[in-house]
Image (cartoon, rainbow, N blue to C red; front, top):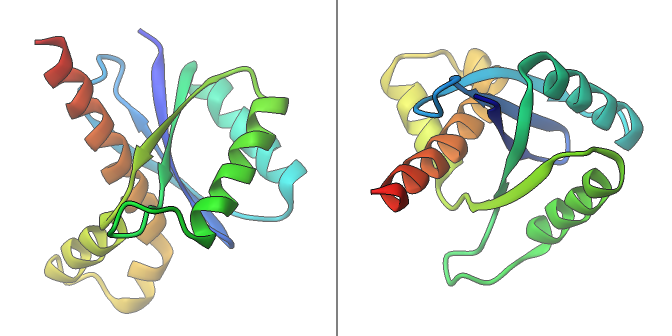
Length: 141
C-alpha cells in the first residue's frame, strides 16, 4: 500500500510524519528547516519518493471559531505551490490544537525545552496525520 505524509507547515519549519504501510498509524519522520520554496519542495519530493507517498495530509490552522486567519492563508499559498510542482494528492486536515496537544504530551514526557523545540513540529505532524487516518477508518466502517 502507498503511504500518506502528514505535514505541519510553519514559517520556519515543516513537520513531517508518514503513515505505516497499512495506513493505521503515523510516525514522525523529520522537521524540515525551511530554506525557500524551491528547496522545501525538493526536500518534500525526496521524502515522497523514499516512502512511496500517494497523498499529503496538510494541517490547516483554523481559528477556534472555524475561520481562516493569516497562517491559514500562508499554508494555502504553500499548498498551491505544491500542486504546481509535485504530483501528489492533497488533503487538508483541521489542525486546531495539534501543537498544543503535542506540546502538552512532550512536557508530560519530561522532554526538555530545547528538545521540545526541535521535535514539536514533527510531533504535530503526527497528530495531524493520525487524526486523518482515524477519520478514514471510521468512514470505512
